[in-house]
Image 1 (tube, rainbow over the protein chains, first blue to last red):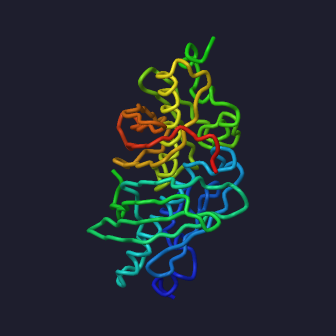
Image 2 (cartoon, rainbow over the protein chains, first blue to last red):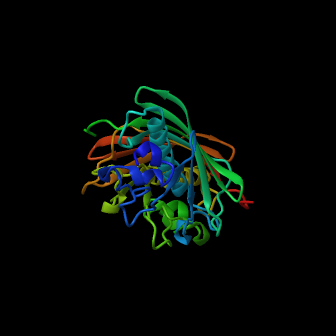
Image 3 (cartoon, rainbow over the protein chains, first blue to last red):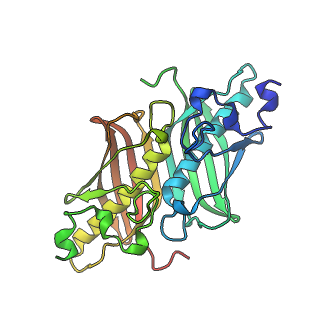
Amino acid sequence: MNIHASIRSKPIQHFYLDEHNLCYGCGQHNEDGLQLKSFWQGEKAIASFNPKKKHNGIPGFVYGGLVASLIDCHAMATAAADHLALHPEVEDLPRFVTGTMTVRYVNPTPLNDEPLELSARVTERSGRKSHVIVSLSCAGKVTAEGDVIAFHIPETMD
Amino acid sequence: MNIHASIRSKPIQHFYLDEHNLCYGCGQHNEDGLQLKSFWQGEKAIASFNPKKKHNGIPGFVYGGLVASLIDCHAMATAAADHLALHPEVEDLPRFVTGTMTVRYVNPTPLNDEPLELSARVTERSGRKSHVIVSLSCAGKVTAEGDVIAFHIPETMD
């Protein structure tokens, strides 16, 4: 089954090439990392993450850096899956990297047994650039909004 | 020695009240966390952080979420120390929380033996709000810029 037929069946990150799959936030090969898993639903991607007690910020709430990390990685996966969906000729999942990210912490994010739910979609595309908007919610309440400019990774990072 | 006399002698985070000192990014009481330490130099705060190999993003570079986490926590410490410096009557270090954070990833941040160096200062203050600008560099090259709105923490987070 080619990637276009199977992209919805597994986490988007499952399809990253091995060398793109080591990220602390979402790399499936980073055993110490968060291993965020994003799922493509066509036009949008969703993810769910269970923060650990150590991810505390102000007592009882998730620290802002985790919220930013999840938004960042989820946005990159969304941009990649969106690019794939629009390019039937592409056979490998592309990798995007973050250009600019704005996170608005609209409500404190509770740290309890409730998972954090992410949803994201691409709103604009131009050349190598995709604009991704992300929402993060807990128990049905949006606690953070992300606005992310993602770039299709260049051949080298030099 | 009161806090105004001693704020430059130890990490800013050392002066957070215990209940404000559990953050994964900068809490000195969070044994599993990053324990970022920011130092007040008068008008600006600096910090240095040694990323671990696990903090990989794209191979050879730091993942964006760590960069955002460090900028976030360092900005909060900067806002707190700045507030203290401007309020001689204050006896406890205040705690700020993030309202909005923009991170511009202007260059890839290398992941090697070089520490990440942060510098931040408050550019505007209005009521409970402080605007903090942050730069993060590695081996003398700026790799990320942060623009952060910090809020003096309310009495409760409800």
